[in-house]
Image (cartoon, rainbow, N blue to C red):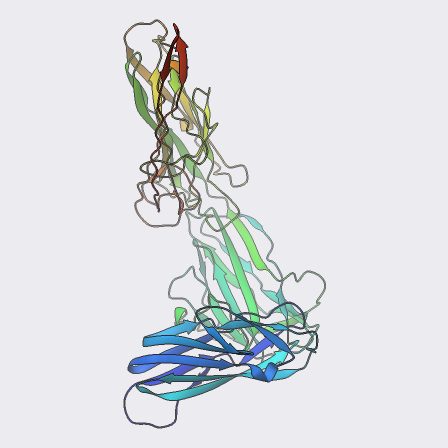
Length: 507
């Protein structure tokens, strides 16, 4: 970023513009959002606005206004910031090339920032049409990494554009939780937290058609509870548009070893633009099924809560990967009972997350419920509450809860004895059958969310408790429904009313 400040002035508040050195406009498609930041230094500034002018690109580009800025003419916008304390990022526009734009065309974007109580400041970004295009090579998927072991990754990229990255390139490394990146290189800057990566600068010019990889691999170590994760990186030209997630202030530590360099490799077809790859360790997680007891009188409807607990030592931890859950649990009600809490799709209720079991109807022989957490830590549990009607007394009847792994992300359970547990029955009253299900008002199934500890969960499901965050999803809802039934008996019509309660519960 280029930093623009005003000339010498009296002590007081000043404005500082943070602008890109270069904006690369492709010859086809659209360019990235223009990066722009403004800071009030030495105090608060008021009535702050920034005029951005790209009119030097007339005939070569069109503008798509984004963010909070407003068009003031062809290729011009005004961004009204208002009062400013500290730094604010602005997302003014992106550019699209016209049919007349040719590789090698140039231009400039200029900035004028004003305030009612600070001097005016200006800045500039150079524009290049058809600049370098850096495509990354994907990481291979890694498996069978021992818990706590070190593994390696080697970033690589190719310039598939029509212009050189003549000032060099930037490398941003970002990874999932559960791995630590070794701080090996003095031209790299590392996060204060071990699992959020680093950035490195390379001054090697990259010509069109050239490809490079780092001259040494990046070294990672997986924590002992890690089962799954990913590593990723992105490369862009020095002075060009950085990723939205990049902030140099997030990487305060500098490596102490030798500099990381680049070495030339064959370009080939393996550079797809996505520097991403998953890994899996050999760690396992013991899933324990959680049962309950149906207790009451014949004819009553009561509640049970069942689910699965992660007894560790492994943590599933794949919340940013292509998985919806950490497995499932299958619930089979005891003989002589009927699960009545099977709300239909889209129904909502109080108090919590989405009904996460199928089928979505009352009276099924069994229900399959998602362990709706993709950050299922040791000590976490996922539960679902059901309402159950006691129809009759069946001596010795038992239902069951069975934990089932996600076949794509198995928990590799080494203790299968506790994967299944019983749902018991303590029923009193007549052993004769109760009236048919259609003659009883329906009850609802509910699920509640009770997060504890830290971590990140995704997806929807029942309660998650213990050492991690509840896996309820941002729009978790619970179904509570009544069913309207029309009964015809002895010439009399009886209508049962239905009620639906709606609420929204977040994480």
